[in-house]
Amino acid sequence: MNLQQFRFIRETIRRNFNLTEASRILFTSQPGVSKAIIEFEDELGIKVFERHGKRIKGLTKPGAAVAGIIDRIMREVDNLKKVSDEFARRDEGSLVIGCTHTQARYFLPKVIPEFRKRFPKVRVSLAEGSPSQLANMVLQEQADLALATETLANVEGLTTLPCYAWEHTLVVPPDHPLTSLTSTQAKNITLEQVAQYPIITYDRAFTGRNSIDSAFASKGIVPDIVLEALDADVIKTYVDVEMGVGIIAGVAFDPRRDPGLVGIPVGHLFGEHVTRIGLKKGMFLRDYVYAFLNMCAPNLTRENIDSEVTFDSVE
Image (tube, rainbow, N blue to C red; front, side, top):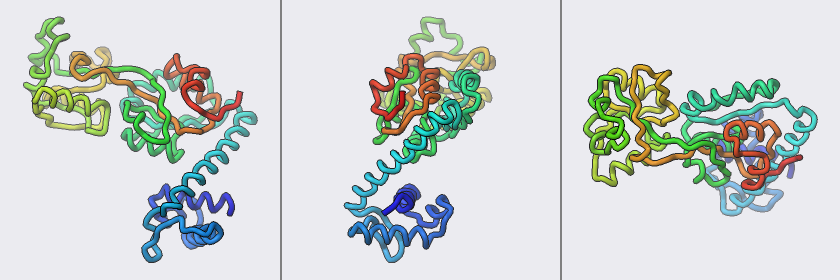
């Protein structure tokens, strides 16, 4: 058995057992991948994959155990390369950040310029997606880390660190009836008052949507959600044309940036949320990754990160 066979098996699993797709990613032929897998199974004396004719349908029970071992071996091989890079090219490399549109548009612009000044030779890339897509990117090592809401903490194979806390904000046009509320009334706005109007908010996969649904359900209220969107910019656009009131992440509203809208904090209705940073367990962290994490959240020092997460690292 050899590393090439391990790569072929790992990529076949990652591509949902599609040998054509796996061979394309690996820049080789499908028959070559298939032959390497069969030779590996013959050498090991077990079937790693379940088959229907010539098609691979999934992992056998022993195959699932083998897949876990191969993943660990390949992770350590990748870590060896990163250790080499850390000493040979300490301030060079790449950083792929998985993030939702909200993080890319409103949070990361506060971090990335500073990071680029400190590490000008590090290539930074943003990969946007839903929290579940971001988790898969990190697990499959298509992204070095991911920023999203608490849902990342529920993904097996990821370790997550708190980044910042936030609450939802209700956004309305300046002439909307809710803007006539006094400061005290606005602070104590109720779900019943909000539900009097059509609502525009996030898709169910994004940014605290579950807490919005749960809050209304707990009061027996069925809100009139007329539009679901993937990001706050779209929500604000449709609020601006008076299609309804918007419920967005507070970080996505700024009176200076959104002069055509009025924001009403509604954390007392939908609770506090924590954006978290997800990393794949066991991955080696370059120095500049530690620095990026600290820029995102100053409490995330190298010592704090190492105390919360078991990573392979080099001092």
